[in-house]
Amino acid sequence: MLLAIDVGNTNILLGVYQGAELRATWRISTDRERTADELAVLVRTLLDTAGITLAEVRHVAVSNVVPPLAPSIRQFTRRYLGQDALFVGEALRPEIPIRYTPKSAVGADRLVDAVAVLARYSAPAVVVDFGTATTFDAINRDGEYLGGAIAPGVGISLEALFRTAAHLPRIELARPANVIGGSTVESMQSGAFYGFIGQVEGIVARFRQELGEDAVVIATGGLAELIAGETDCIDHVAPYLTIEGIRILWEAQGHASAGNTPR
Image (tube, rainbow, N blue to C red; front, side):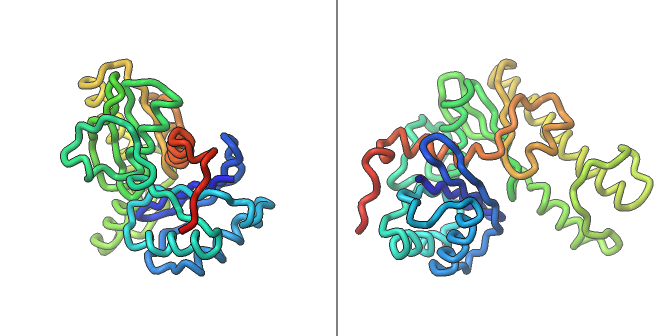
């Protein structure tokens, strides 16, 4: 089995694959101080909930945008699985032409999203990823990664509003009953919910002007389904797009048959 790990700034998404079948997924908070032993206890406990043992995990592939966590992940896989974790950008290198400057500045998660989109959908394409930041990535009809747009994420925007406005409460993002809020909480929910929908629609429309009106739009991330349900500018919702891209990249580069070599 393959354990695919997508380490983001706010959450870590883990998925276990048996071949191309996604057996189970878990989303946990990102803790930069988490040790290798803590990771082992956590992963073993999560696997137990799906009836999978740690010994059944034969391979680990990682997309990571939080460098301080890389040593703990490496130590965890070596100590408890007897193998090296394969990191995107190191052992796993997406073979996609990159038109971004500098190329090294493109996050691993954005590249594996592009890998998954090119394998599962079509190009040109736009990927909208609702994470710590809301990122918009553009892939042209030649399969080249062009770049995109980066906006503050829903969560950090609401947190900033709570922290800087003395009389506004901390709220949960939810679809309000009405666009015109009848209370402070409803007004904040309306502004956040419909404001982000407007942002997505506006940026996607402008991307399509440059990429082509036939560009397919894929939404991923924790809030993808909530936002996509209120707009027709999103063609597909793929909450596990990033770990699917990790799996596709891992298989495409021959690791499915070759295995990992312990050091």
